[in-house]
Amino acid sequence: MKTKFLFLLGLVGLMALAFDATAGALNDLDADLVPAGVDVCETVQDGPNDACNQVDADADGYGNACDTDYNGDGDTTVADFAIFFPAFTGVAPDPRTDHDCDGDTTVADFGVFYADFSDPSTPTSPGPSTLPCAGAVPCVP
Image 1 (cartoon, one colour):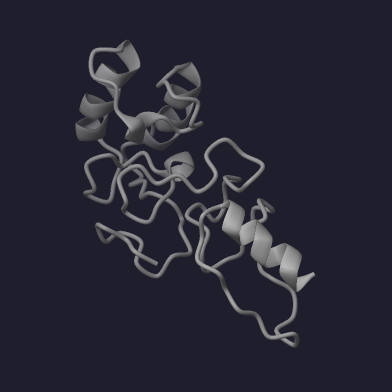
Image 2 (spheres, helix red, strand yellow):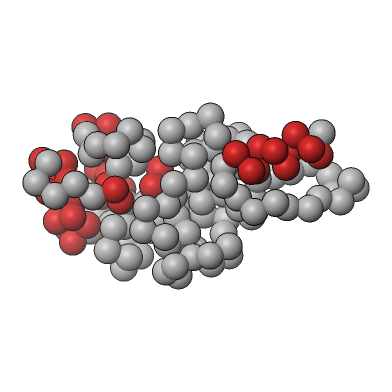
């Protein structure tokens, strides 16, 4: 079991983690096979079975699957839309705006962006991430 788990961590490009046999069950809120403490999107599946597989294009500790704050100010605003729109129209591709990690910024990515952007009265921060360095650039776990 321990060997399989370490192998999975290697697949997602994470550092090997040592677990004590008595540590108990791993906390994996989104069931993406990436345990809390190393998951860049705690509530959105982005593990080895998902296209994003812990991708964090802007190295801020929040994965692409759950990070619509492209300018790093802690909220999804019109300033982020100014980054999203050129990528969406193909004028200026930007890996930060590819939330499903298929290589393009499409309508599916707009849905993720719009969900965070649609209510300006409620600030929408990226994540949540379980990395202790989330929010720092570069976030190096």
